[in-house]
Length: 114
Length: 117
Image: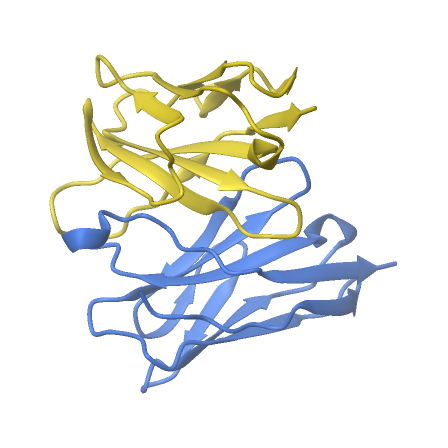
């Protein structure tokens, strides 16, 4: 599975846009890019998934350049409740030997200040 | 509430005791996963079920660990002869996946926090 690298921590303020970049230089052709969010004492929660270009849903956008060696999670106008750990995952969610199991790194601790 | 539930939420046990955790996935989800998470780390995959069949086990899952999903619905994870190193959050997740195609969004439960004293 492709290894991911993301910043250990980030700080932001309420109302700002936050961009968290993840590097995955050895991403494979079949790999999808997925982001999860985790609050303390809770299980991770799916945020967004993409394969290439841009994906947007009601909570975030995911930007993936043409070479797919990195991706950026964009959170518009963050609030205090967005303080959490954000995980970037890369893997073959389409089946195969991984059977969709997730490989988490250490994640990025995002702290939103008032 | 139709989310993934886990029981108990917290368990404190003495070293050497056996513990069992239960996970109730979202109904009709065919895939069920167990993960373990220690403080400051991301979750680590332990094992995976497709319906009632256990299809993959991590090397992290020593022979003291056993998991079942007898009827393809709820699952149990048992740890025998617990050790202090087993102290962690045990997370269960489920998903609905069809063959080889498409995304596999996993829904996680709140976890069971195990403390071995």
